[in-house]
Length: 358
Image 1 (cartoon, rainbow, N blue to C red):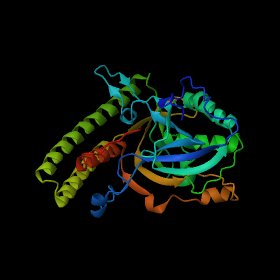
Image 2: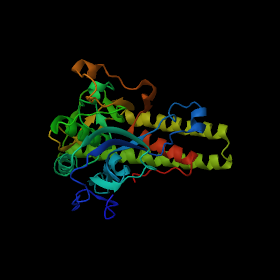
Image 3: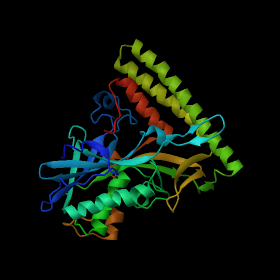
């Protein structure tokens, strides 16, 4: 790639003069492990269903001759700020969930999975770049980790009640732009799939207006209770880490203590779950909005994108018949907080564990 562009915001003034006009640009769907460790032999050996999982971050890669780089939609301040807002003593709520699209030179040590999608012209590439900056970013200014769906079937996932806005949503948007707006035929060898992070409500959603005094009290209380919950979980994790250190990382002891941690977190979550769940996401007009509802479950389902392959005949019935990959489909956590605690637990078990988006 052009030495002048190593890692930067796509909205910066980039000329792309380094891309030739007469050479096709190959497009790839990219995935990078988030640090759950693709092969966790110790955790897998214990047979713990919650720990037998992996998470991925996605991007779109471009290769033109010896030039290779990627587009990456991400939370500007990391995932942490997308889960909970800051609530000060005056009940002011501040979210740290702004997004950006970065461009970087290809790093195969980070992007460990790639799936060829198609080849495009320089003009089509510039259309993708312009769409990313002028269309996707303006309607997706905040990173929303979970989509709200009726159930975990593919038809519900791709027609959500309320959409999420993650790296996978952006990648699917790019593919949709290629296929349905630029007329590019998708010619994949392996159908791209993704970890769909889902909230399934139990009943209808109620809109909360932050400007309404009663609604704001409910919103502030929910997030303060959730923050208290996180403090309790952190204290539990700290105590268990001390016990693990004393055990010299004996496998049986580590797994027992890890299970105890998840059990205590789950028990505490059940108490919190009895209250109304509040989530901040986009409404039908892409305007951020608070919603209140009873939560049924949260899960992560590995599901294939509903793509038309140039080598296949495609019909609506074919799309609706597609199922989530069964061996990757799991109810892994019952809350957004459970996801955080899982990351924390694996960190305890492996002190070299790091989550990075670069």
